Image 1: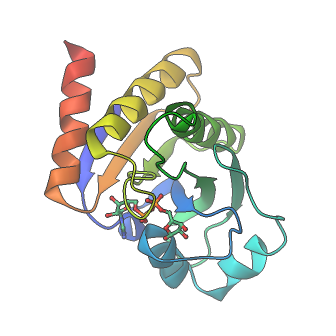
Image 2 (image 1 turned 90 degrees about the vertical axis):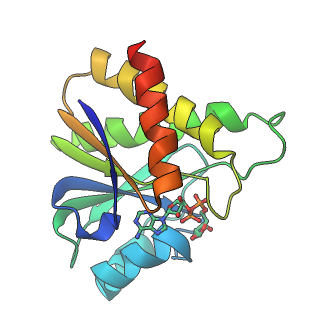
Length: 169
Ligand code: APR
């Protein structure tokens, strides 16, 4: 099941919260900054032990002060016009994040709109890739029961709602 809601991902009580991080995994702005602020310093301390993360991959930490069990850190593609494998890397973010969340027994997973902020990935294009990838993985690997796309603004939420509607057509 995939649901789309508007809100602040750091307030969602789920098994796994996905963070849109950067390759250093040492924090940043946007949702990365919000997650680190809400989780507290223990999150950064654990991130320091992970040795970074490549775009499209995902690494797991505890969730500390967040109302979740784990944080799945993934790194989206920086948008460069679409000819540098950005679509495939974004799909890999969703696939890797669901895989590692399932491996850790997470039933419910909250995702932000990966790469559509500072990384500049076009919103509707990202939403289509995200929803198609999530639906495909959840169909074949039933470990994660519910995914919540947590969108910070209504424009973003509408883009993901449209992508879900397109999938159901
Ligand atoms: N809850 C949910 N979504 C949020 C929140 C929040 N608290 N804060 C921001 N967002 C949304 C943004 O509005 C955007 O739609 O997350 C989406 C992703 O935007 P960014 O956080 O800028 O992430 P991204 O585009 O993947 O860029 C990653 O930004 O913060 C740095 O360290 C990060 O270098 C990395 C880069």
